[in-house]
Image (cartoon, rainbow, N blue to C red; front, side):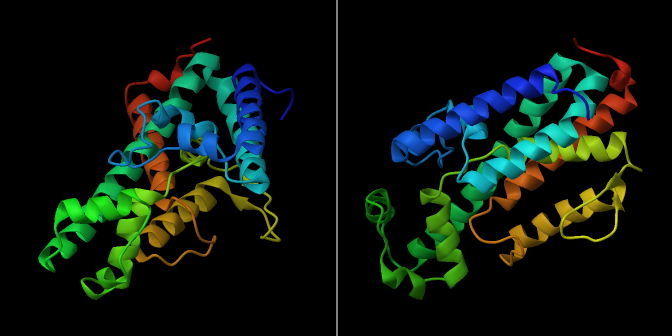
Length: 247
């Protein structure tokens, strides 16, 4: 891969600094810089950007930063620093938009079910704003509806994964025949096959709630980053904009 390119070097440094600060100040950092549901009192407009530098643990930041370096380096060399940063943050913001939109859908579905069961909206909001819930709510709708409703309001999103999924898509479209050697696969697999399957698995997990990657993953943020990455790559290629560098 060669030396670390300028944009990726600075992104790595900022992410590591945020991780160290989170290790020191914990809950305060998560409260300020994670991406909260807009109706939650912890929400701040800056979080659509700051959440990209927050991570939930060592393995989380390790895999994200490795992917940023491995797949982002060829793109920055091809595009130039400024164009890479534009793409990276656009994919990350797109991930935040899709994630928040899905959260609004889940929140409204749960609230509608509770209102239909006779609960008052202000009563429900008072309970969840205190970080609580009523066991009776699970009698008003399916377990998944109420679980998604509570998660949408109470669970913040952290991580660079949305932006990195955009980078993965761009890498796959730019270097489709590159062979990837993965720990869990004993044979190399071309990027044009692996990356679509990875995104499809996230979409499957987001829709069904069945995750092979573990719990606590913002699958639709991954899908959103991939979608915005694909749209940008498709538009750039269509307009021959992909040939331009922004140094």
